[in-house]
Length: 302
Image: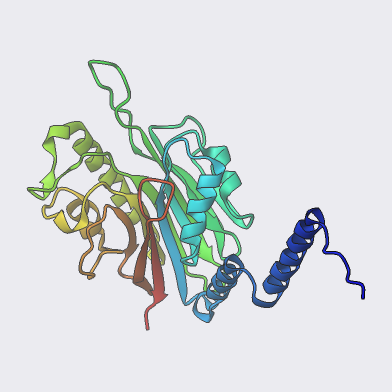
């Protein structure tokens, strides 16, 4: 009786590898990959009835780290897009315009200040499938301040203002992104850090400009702002910082309003006297940049 010889070892290994590949492909075809499942779930969320009908829309603020590359920007933008965002206000740390444009989805438009860059430029990006751009312009939020000792620019901030009309509902927002100076807040006293007097004074000038942008808006336009404010929300207890100079006088709610435990420095703000109010928010921390991304969901009242 004859028996077939065992296949040589050099043939057995490729055969086993081939079988493993076939089994893997079969499994993917039947069950799908985890990444594919997550993408499918994300697509379903983005087509939820409330967002498709315009009863809800999402706004994010995202502070970029200087020198970020396209891959890192795509990662961070992708994270906040999970929150069904259609408007993002960036706090941009110079020299990332081409990378930022390349990192956005194809249906999105980036609005950047034109001309010379400042210490910070604060662009806005929006989804053209959701919003129609009615008007945009660059706003000088605080002018050049010179340090007498060195002659260097201390603060030079530009923000982009965007008037966006929702394609389904006609709801119109006047959106602005801005970035307050660092080291503004004395969290022990709850007021300004007067050791950084120049920064505090620059913040006051910026707050005055923000108030003008809101007060100059037509009544039918909801004022929305995205900010790395550098002021801890639940320790802002005087009349001289964000609550006293911006949100209080303008009757703006924030992602922290009425919610216990709000202690961040990154804000989404929205005008209270509007048919859309901030309904919920989420903080995204698995990011390349060094700040959490804040996503606030606005919902129609009533």
